[in-house]
Length: 119
Image 1: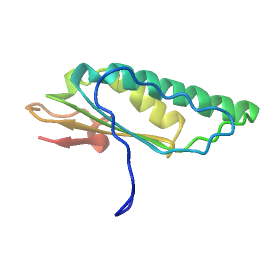
Image 2 (image 1 turned 90 degrees about the horizontal axis):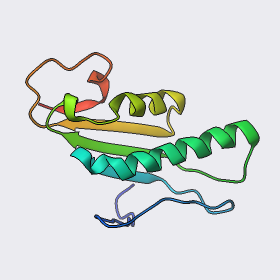
Image 3 (image 1 turned 60 degrees about the horizontal axis):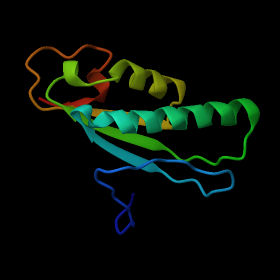
């Protein structure tokens, strides 16, 4: 987003991301804390499937980028972190993530360090 960009926010409830062929591409910003990652991880998997399909078969979906901001007390409470790192590696620049930890007391593993902010 840039200054004065219009954004839509949704907190809680039933929500989904189901772009249709021919829709204009949208850039998603997904924000999760703790176990709130569950529905957003499903959205990320769907986006990855569409990107994979798009690259492999040339489908008509036009996808933007997906940026996930995910917070937990420490890295051990970041659910699906290895899967998310795998998606970022498989679709560089298309799927990105920034993990934020609030009460980390131990060393953060090398694999996560570039993607973690906080204590």
